[in-house]
Length: 289
Picture 1 (cartoon, rainbow, N blue to C red):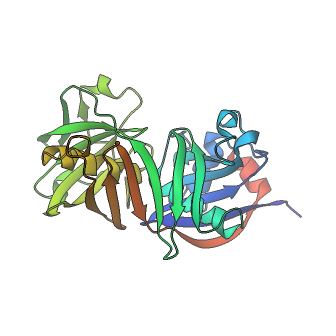
Picture 2 (picture 1 turned 90 degrees about the horizontal axis):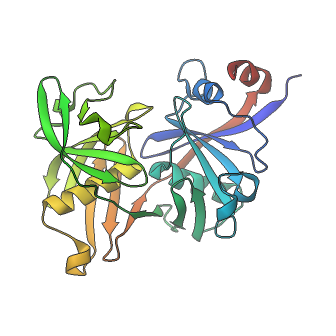
């Protein structure tokens, strides 16, 4: 009988993930294996993979072990490695709660984008301290189907190009990455957000995530959009001394983003575990080749 590897499925505003608990970092997760697991027809299906590892057991996280027991070894759906995933952190925290590793209240999660502060509320919502946004200088342009828009370059530990448009349909099908120029601005690719206004401090977006295509939600993207919208609106909490909160509708739900005067950005939203089971280890070994 083949060995089985435990897995779970979860989502945050319909940004869905395969979750692999692996405290001792024993699994050999090649890009091919991750892509096979995330395949929506031949695998389990997911926009990305959350590899749950104790920080002390992973070479990329050992330096953070004193601050955070658990490391979110996040992979994009195509198998590539990413620095951070905001929706993923919320689902990661929900898994830790479900597994009995944490309860309601505060915890710290190590990521390639640094240690993130997380709060699990009694109503089930999860708030993640997403760090500070960086706003690199330089003009950026996003193009789709003959149209072009200026975009705001925002870095949330991963890169984003935020374009404000009149209609979300202008984003096209988002199957492939919208051209961004100058291309040298993003040597490792970029997440592209198209944004419309819904009401004061209330926006909606569609997003192309690098390595995944269009997704139902992007947590870091929602943060980047909120910051870009605030600056467009002439709002900077570091100047006013007052937090700025934006409601951001994504195709899979709603996120609430607050930028504090110290620059820290907090994202609040749901996180749900929907299933768990076992992967055939022999299949995964074959897929990993």
